[in-house]
Picture 1 (cartoon, rainbow over the protein chains, first blue to last red):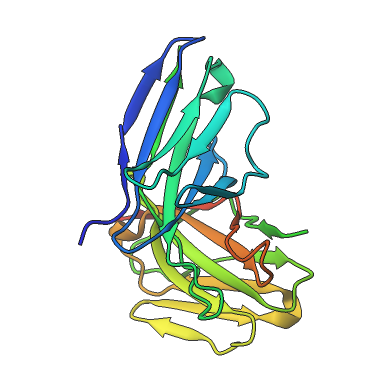
Picture 2: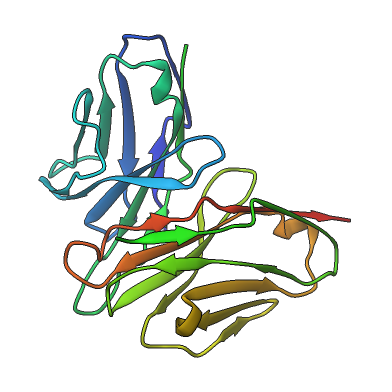
Length: 117
Length: 117
């Protein structure tokens, strides 16, 4: 009964390169969330996706960042032309998210630590 | 607007001491949910508890207890007889009850707990 799987755990990129972060939700979960954690800070919401749909991307920077959750395969957070300020830990979470049953506990992966040189 | 404040940045205690981590929240929603997560040095976030706004009963789970007080908008977390393994960063989080905020978690900045032997 695997939990939320994120890979890679650590990712090093040079300025201007692309970063791809992957997240496989818990079995049976169809809702995925991405959060960013800067050093010494809490997690900040970025985007909420269901299969093939972006539900809420109000926390995503307007440029260079995109996310998808295809019908098959993991969710991907893509950062194009990375800059030093993108260095952070990126966490993925998944949930059942049934509002009628009030099931909104989010289970988190171990995160991807992105370092931009 | 939703907001969570964890005023204690870092707390150090000696093993077997009791310790309380404070969490104060702001929301205009009448229905909302409060959470605590633990982030050990390995980095992953571990779910501890979820509480909805209509349930003000305090909860105890082993050495952990939570005190939810709507009158002061607080959801404090107490560890009794702390152990070295409790050393971690603890995050309090809030989600709303409406369709927009139900799946969007707002995290406090975390409290780092150091338990010394």
